[in-house]
Length: 327
Image 1 (cartoon, rainbow, N blue to C red):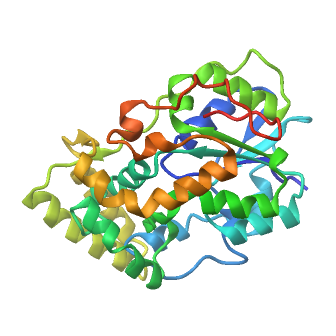
Image 2 (cartoon, rainbow, N blue to C red):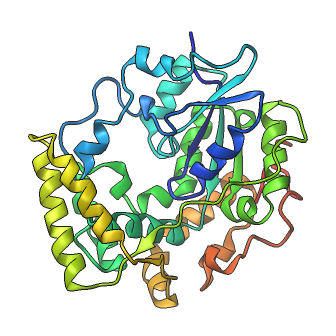
């Protein structure tokens, strides 16, 4: 069977794409060409409905076993095989499916300031014309309604950032020694050190991984009549693509128009952070219990955008069970 040996399991908008590309450069690691196959998210075909753009994304799922194994069939003999689906940390059923099929799998988890992560998530969907709510905090207020309506996990802006709950469950499914937890800012600020720790966790040769490829920077179009009009047309085209697959071409063209002359993602204000921190405070405390680490900087005004990574330099902390962790 050509199945993966390890996973980059989460979280979305926390550097998983860059880490996937970095690990693919190691000769003893083979990363799937489809970066995010999502195989373990479903037990059969993905849903046939959801929020704006969800059905198009569901069509990209590699959900059939033969197709999934084919992603790893060309791995060199002896190489460790890996894939990166950043929703595995969030999806409890996915964790159980992985454990049932690959009980010795190793999982890499990246934790990013949850408010910053949610903001990047919303910006991704709003700038693509899919989220009709042009205010980040108000969009988060729509989250529960969207969950109840069956919108895909990527719309769960704040729920995706409750890592304490997610790790608490993950540790009931996998032994802690099979899970490597790192912090997003450590990966960004000390990539060579963190990549070497990951290399050691996976048990491959040292001295190869030293750089992290540049991350994708989410564009942030100006609030304008053009953006509102094009976004409305784009959401209509995604709805039509559910029954008229040819409409996907129009969707791509409209996305190009939206991204034209866009700015990088704009920083959060302290007022926005204050509005959302109550959703995360209890979970941050749980995360501290689960990891034995201090995450109180996530309750401060700047979050990840201020480069706050804890009291000690990255790489100088150890989990209680002695396994390497990067915070």
